Image 1 (cartoon, rainbow, N blue to C red):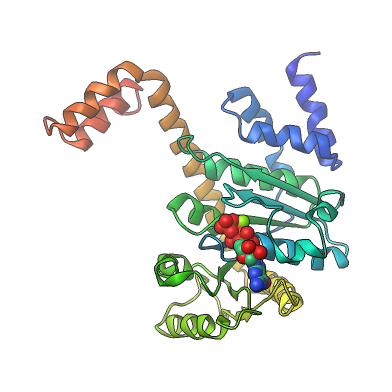
Image 2 (image 1 turned 90 degrees about the vertical axis):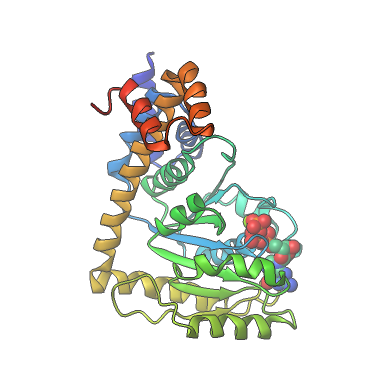
Length: 322
Ligand SMILES: Nc1nc2c(ncn2[C@@H]2O[C@H](COP(=O)(O)OP(=O)(O)OP(=O)(O)O)[C@@H](O)[C@H]2O)c(=O)[nH]1
Ligand SMILES: [Mg+2]
């Protein structure tokens, strides 16, 4: 059987929601082989039904734990949930409070939940594409909600979160002022703010600080009327989790009714095309200009030529400019 036939039946199996087929297709999302990507491309038209929710915030702010709480709550309503964890610095399954009562294993054996971690850090580019393609696979396989967890540090991670329909930004007590400051850039992409770990005594202060920052005029990223709510949650007590799930749903309804879903989808499509184009150019440079690029970098370093001229030289070799 040739690869194309295999891939075709693989697509059928993914569309039926077969776990092993999904995992195989996801390995294509992280592959650098063009034939893999082309087959992945054939899946794109079957996605576009799921509610994609970005979950971002500084490291250790409780994103994974919250993703698990949200997932458990959604499972009670029968919704199927996919989770894409981008470059998790702490293991998805480890350390969380709820782990004592509800083991990650419960989610891992639940056929209505699919968890995929991407650890593409270190490979140049392609992270956003891999993450969003992985989300598409879950979407095409019939998962109702896809949660994408990314650390809210670094442009690629923020871009990934922004490619969701609904963005949740987590803050938490006990992370220190330095870390809290990093997140200023990420605050403005929130559709919903969560102060996680509200069971901790210092949570009130975090809530106060966040509200103070928001009062400085950071609006939501949307064009339409949506008052960005701030909600406190705890994985320890379960406080706020159901309210958060309700808000996520309300936000999706709002997007649909206001027409903003249409606008966001359009922007996401644009962003994905541009990212894919950037990836292709970057890869071509690496593949085709391997020997020549070192001296060019060096000339720029020594200020013999300027970066723009150098870039044009590189692109000329690829026949991308005159
Ligand atoms: N007290 C308390 N601790 C929590 C809560 N949620 C998470 N934690 C703890 O906070 C730590 C970080 O939680 P994670 O869920 O791994 O945070 P994260 O944002 O996913 O972390 P990274 O992926 O490493 O950026 C863990 O030790 C959790 O047990 C909570 O609601 N209450
Ligand atoms: Mg995490």
